[in-house]
Amino acid sequence: MRSLFLSTLIFSTALGVVVPRAGKKIDYNGFKLLRVSLSEGAEDVEAQIEELAAHVLNPGKTAHLDVVVSPSDADAVTALAATSTVLNEDVGAALAEEGELAAYEVPSETWFTAYHSYADHLSFLSDLQAGFPGQSELFTTGSSVQGRTLTGIHIWGSGGKGSKPAVLLHGTVHAREWISTMTTEYFAWQLLTKYASDATVKSLVDKFDYYIIPVVNPDGFVYSQTTDRLWRKNRQTVSGNSCVGRDINRNWPFKWEVPGGASTNPCSETYKGQAAGDSPENTGLRTQVDALKASTGIRLYLDVHSYGQYILWPYGYDCNLVVHNDAEHRSLATRAASAIQAVSGTAYTIGPACATLYATTGDSTDYTDGVGNATYSYTYELRDTGRYGFTLPANQIQPTVRETWEGFISMLKDA
Ligand code: 0X9
Ligand code: ZN
Image: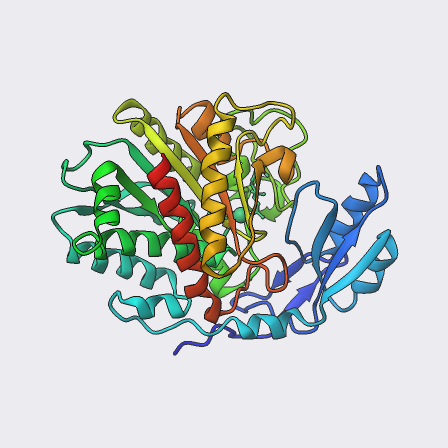
């Protein structure tokens, strides 16, 4: 077993931004997770809290902010907030509960009992594909800032390769959302390994062509394993600024320019980039969306994130706009949420993204709907609601992927 927690040294700058020493992993021991609320119209206070925080875990305009703060900045953040609750006294201790990265083993159910390195995720995909060469292949769609190819698996059924409307799944656009990697992989695993034995799965694989990319932000994902477990964005630099990373889910070239749903500050967790679609990851992803639109069309798009337990649909960029097939989106989401809840009681909130959670501009589902003409576009926010947040313990991987699979199956039947 390789240790997930390599080292302990950090710099904490005057602004609270945590910068790792070269080659060292950020140690969150003693850091607190605070849930803070702000007074009405206190944008300047919010900006100050964001500067003090090592990370904002829910960087949108919600009723509260969940922030990870160093021991030395905790009092200052509490003083700025209207109210504040300690959700976790020691983020480092919570990270330790997540479990270690497992050694590689060929695909089996055991894969879904631990988290894995990026190299092992690639091996998983290629070994899974090799077991089903007649109905799957690996594909790439562009590459990341650091040159990693965006790699996915294409799965088809009895109609043959590329003959049916597309179901497109993205995982790990936000680097720290590791449960989304496991969940999208579980869907691929189930579709292929159950095809021969499960009539429902067979009918659903025969109905659509599946394009599943478990890690659409490989550089960020690797960085979240080597250096900063709570990293969100890609690893793109901005000339003249020392802050790194664009939020790939604010970079899609549809309504990117609308104000209010993303940040123009390169240091923000939701930095939108300098121009619409100016991240290489986005270029790769949208090239595929555009190609699928032009060929078979996209029936269902899922962007799988964590955390919060939401199923959301367009639009993100305007809280008053109602998508033309809102009722159909709601119906599929209602049934999927029931299917998930039936497994072990996990409750999801559903609704249009902006009105239900917060505004986003340049997000994936607005693009797949507005430009990609996907019939259905959803963002899933998986477990939990904040107790563990992004660092869901390994013993919750199987329960999470299994319940979410039921939601996915429900949507596929209805779509
Ligand atoms: O902010 C995001 O990109 C997503 N949440 S996350 O915590 N995983 O980062 C939510 C995107 C859903 N769209 C809107 N809420 N508009
Ligand atoms: Zn996310």
